[in-house]
Length: 184
Image 1 (cartoon, rainbow, N blue to C red):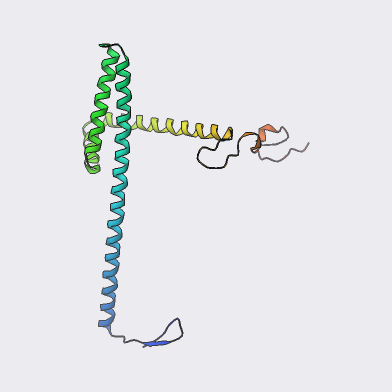
Image 2 (image 1 turned 120 degrees about the horizontal axis):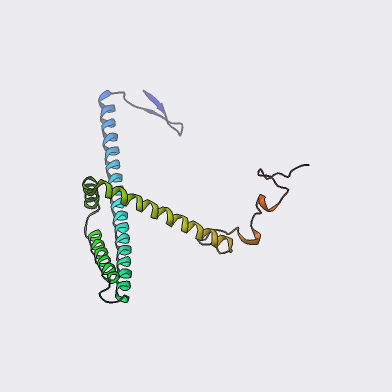
């Protein structure tokens, strides 16, 4: 059997089924090894990123704990607020240590166990986290829009706000919602 190559030369190959099977097996093994290597690389990178995120979360929890501790220290000794803030600070510090010390898989398992034991508390906590996330997103959007309106780009993006911005249709009485001038 003859095959024309890209450079115009002709190669003669045997059409031996055993040779084709051997070449196919070799290609399959190469593909499996490449897929395995890529999978190990992706899993390693995912673990590294998860660990970094976990450490960041633990740092944030520790920061909240320190703030609560500081607030507790500034309150009158023995007051209900001082005891509440102190207890919350201790709990947050313990939780930060737990987040640092546990493997991500363990935390997921623990969260699943908690959700099965206390479904109402789990759903309530998830709802609170969702509300907090929405509030944070809205606040960051408002801050970004405020920065753009004052001519201070917040994230390196060009600013189109201020007096050089694009005029809205409501600023011109002759403009309709479609942006076209009305004809009378």
